[in-house]
Length: 368
Image (cartoon, rainbow, N blue to C red):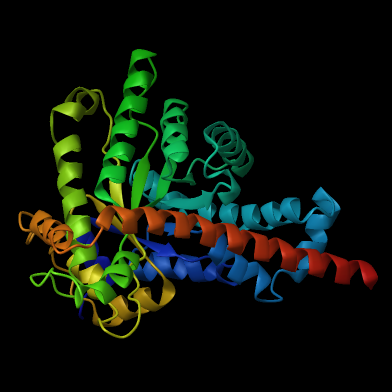
């Protein structure tokens, strides 16, 4: 029998997480994905919850129950609904968490996107969410804004598992990795264990090509083909990962039991029809990484995936691709800044839309 391609990714050292959650998949469907595909984690974001809660009637009974517990404030109702899903998923994934000694088996929950530029507020909310979840395998998502990176270091010191999200560029990734090292070093100096917390750094992939591909024809970057920029960017980030976590900066911490902060490939679904559905998953299959797949990409890889290590295949050539973009007149840094702000804005809008929908549902329930 042919091996399930999703399970095959474990053979190259990559963990597969699922970029989706909704009440209808809990617990039975998630249990099936774990059992059949070797799934070892779940990621969520405000847009996913907006679609799940605001786009269906599946939560209507739960909304009524939440009102009895937390009142009629839409934000409090949303958190009660989301936390219910997060806890249920965490319980399904607990065996993966235990078997991997805390490396995998996480479900991620994001702090409010409204706090993206508020380091202190992010720390406060992350601590509260983690405590409220009551499950060790809940990973709090913090955006990689300057304030978010500052908050992430402090959360690492306090032992909170963090998924640093909305990373687009290599330099921002370096800042995140260095913040993790600093946070663990502060734990070590305080006499705390550095074997925990676990952390991942989520680098977003396809959105970069969606920005750059349309610019290539009019640029001077003749040596760069469509679909190359995002993969090259990820490979350069992976080189930074190896430099930091397999080099001097991490050596003493590793000896004390610390584990590297793995890179997680996010936004792995292709945009449009130019590329095969598994394009980014195939290109970035490699050791000591995580890939989180939205449902369509997940199903496509299960059907058509070819699990073999490709991440390091052209690692040394990757910087030249980014240099060629800049030499051709493409302002890569400006594009990366734009993507970060657009990512935050999209999550803020999804969160607001969800709260508006919840407000309407609450009003309708009160009128009956």
